[in-house]
Image (cartoon, rainbow over all chains, first blue to last red; front, side):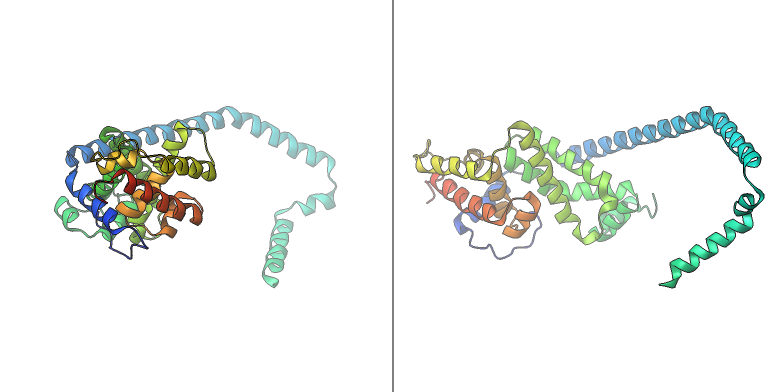
Length: 114
Length: 186
């Protein structure tokens, strides 16, 4: 039935099984093409709605980025100037690209030691 | 839309190929899968709810859910079973939205009481769907999956998230109730 394999019915009532088989043959489904067309139409609508949602999400992210970018840039500049004013030469050395590379190398060695 | 098949190739393609193409995002392959699988899914819902229009709505809901989540399907060969489990979930969501949750024990007790009483239409030739409609929804679901879909007890247990003992009990008691209602054939 319904394209499924027949299997051991696990103690199911054989007469009831026959009734189910007969009932499924007696009630043919109407308009399969209409059903498929309606489902495909719903899929198209769903795809369009999903596309619109994605476009809106991208637009919101871009707008937020545009609004927040000047504030983030100003805060970063303030932070850098504060560091230049307050950190000692030794501390500045720790923030240099060479120090960052050394730290990354050390972290890589520790991660791969085990 | 990678690996899209031509309309003639779609008709001749085996299901594994169609599922693989659908997973890759080919909607026309998925449309062909809907065409091939609509019969069993609509039959299942018609048996469960007896309303052709509602059955078609629920079937459509099942196919749409499957389409949205098909990339989560790990093995194309499992498509049929996966789709059927989705259909069972759609049905359970519908049933649970319509009525407050009752425990299996309560439901079984209610069913026992019903079985203990004489069948209301005993002696009349009831059709199978009318008899099925008298069963509580969970029992009807278990009976339909066992007898119409030929699912094993364990498969029903996995699909419905009911305990194995409850599934067995629903099937045994539900079948007894059906036999009682369909007295004419016994």
